[in-house]
Length: 219
Image 1: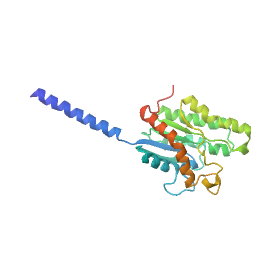
Image 2: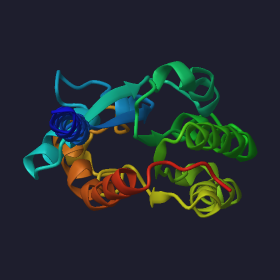
Image 3: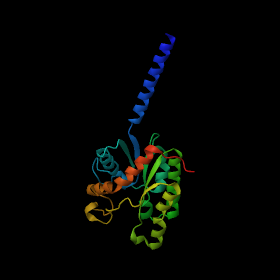
């Protein structure tokens, strides 16, 4: 009888363990879109910002994912670094890091921008959070010297940390009035749709990597 009871207890324990594992695997992958007005959805209506539309597009393709919008209009990389810890909660598995446009527009020294982005990436990796780096390109009117220095930031950081890099967050939208608000800088709802469409392949790769490997700390 004792053996029978032990066997039943063992089976019950296995059932509980399987239930826990199944429940854990059923949890959606948690993502944070961390950036400035381009992430926040400046000038757009409810549900029209990039994180919300990206989440909807991913779910339509069968991805179980939740994307929190941690974009703040006007944020520089310095401001982003100062709020990183409380803006990205524990349990986050992937961060879309999109900052640097305001640094560029304000003429912040690219070395400072790179230092801040580097610190954010290192902090997230230390917490075991994967990073998809969304790059920015300098405006032509800032001159070739500034542009060459600024534009090199994102590829260099991606190589340093082995990150998935989306080279230009506004690819396919910048300078196209049909996809921009009246200010000529921020995407309208149609522009967000195009950005999401272009971003999807890289996002799906980043999701796959986050599910399998997570954001292991850098060596």
